[in-house]
Amino acid sequence: MNSEFVKEMETKLITAREEILKKFISESEDFKRIVNGLESKDFGDIAADDVATKKLEAINRHESIRLKQVESALGRIRNNHYGVCLQCGKKIPEDRLKAIPYAVRCIDCRNETERENRRARA
Ligand SMILES: [Zn+2]
Image (cartoon, rainbow, N blue to C red; front, side):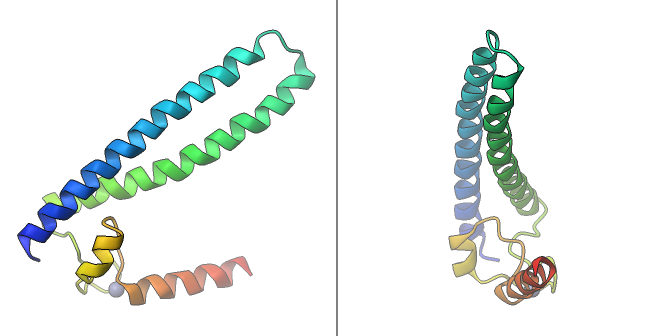
């Protein structure tokens, strides 16, 4: 894979990682606000706050999955495995990597995975 292109993707991934981390920090401030708000309340109110906490956890989970994807893409760059489909071993097209720098599957394999997920959900 073209090393200049990989370098460009690496920069993108590092930026994405910084953005996710910044988001984590601002969310944990929201979290602190929720927790601080709990002190003077009785258990009835805590249940409502619990919903807010769970919502925040869901956002964090989503972001932490993305963070892991970004981290593993950076790892693949270091190991010279970047841009290779994890499933079939073919090269992932540069256009796809431009859109999703942490993509681990080519479009064919991604579509297949999505079809399977849909089937599992149905
Ligand atoms: Zn593939």
